[in-house]
Length: 620
Ligand code: FES
Image 1 (spheres, rainbow, N blue to C red):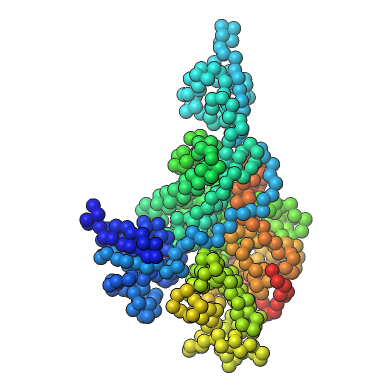
Image 2: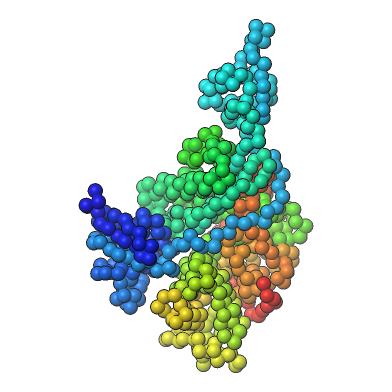
């Protein structure tokens, strides 16, 4: 078979794979276990999947010519998503093109105390054997000991044999009033559940002891769906364009969850058949793909979900490694892109229980915002993500090794790079920092224009002026010189990057404005802003506020609350009452669809302008 296939070797790892002729390089890399960045979903427009072909690179595809610079093409760079393998290749993968497993994954939640009363619980039983005085049938005999339980036909088929083989004793595993399994001996001390935060980019799983509530292990993975595009719309487009697209994405997700469960049980030294319950929280698209429900309707206006109420699925029917009787609880959803992860976040933050108005903000690939004003809960989502995730930013990258993650500008520029490596690009937090700091320095004006040297206000430090490069009508600002950078080019904040940031920020800001208006509140009435999620936990509050991403309120009213979706999933896993609470909050929360809101475009236009002055430049 290998005789017909072509060898592709990837550097610097040295991994080789054999692929059929015409296989796209992106897929070949995936087979070698190398996940490349694909924010545009392999459409040849983002340029993030570029790789360098060491010897005799094939002729560049039209997409490679259109997206890469002539110098890059001449140096052998090609887009992996648009290059077919026709001859043996040695492919050099630049650090910034990989979707590194070292990227910052937020696994911590705020660790709130939890009542432990899970839906799944165990009960030890000993039954009197049948006799001529007591010839009752087996099921009522068991029900006399366990209460009014229901038993599935599958379990009925083995029940009688189990009772006789085990001397009429054992442990019953119950979910609510349903008998899930019968186990020999006393296993009441053993039972585990997994809480999953299924993000578009990362998947975090936690194993809990269902008896004590103790967290036993944590495992995380990059969501393998990233191969089909960074944002949910790219993935929806993929499954629309491919007959087996949904099955492909669902299988990749299940495989990822199985890898996580395997790692969790190995770390905790338990068996996967001791996992009786899985609770999963994700955005609407992720949850629907996981369930195998077509999310295509989320890809067109009006964005419509497949379900609202929580879904209960059989783990075995999904192919998940857990007890055969284990069930998967998938969080209820609120509307369009406000999905289960937001409900989990509302549960975790107890948003209905605050005395004063609270704004919950979770900025990931999408931005979800919930405004709680007493009993009133309003939720919306905005297309905030791509810029904050480093996509559509000319030298942007995810928060992985080599990414500039912090920028401080005084008389000159200081940067912090993840992994203490030479800078290869900038991630979302650095984008916010750079824009905020340049606004303060007077180098960017309120319209978002990077000013050329001859238009700068007086007093801009010479070292900063020296970093400005003007070509034609556009100016860019150098964050790291060619000598400092990992690659062979300096790293800049480009004018286009600032425009992308304005789009992303404007969408969130307009969403907040519209919700405040619906609630009859001014920004100053917000008692707390709760920042949740991966991105929220890494941004600097004063800079996010300077560019208008967060309301103009004092820094001490802005709090990070960790991975709220993960905490919500844990609460629901460990307590049956939390499920009812999640269901109540889902019903109570009013969804605001910004795509249908007549005020949105006007608000959005106004929100693109940066706030005129620093509210409070306190350090974070
Ligand atoms: S250009 Fe290849 S994934 Fe975007």
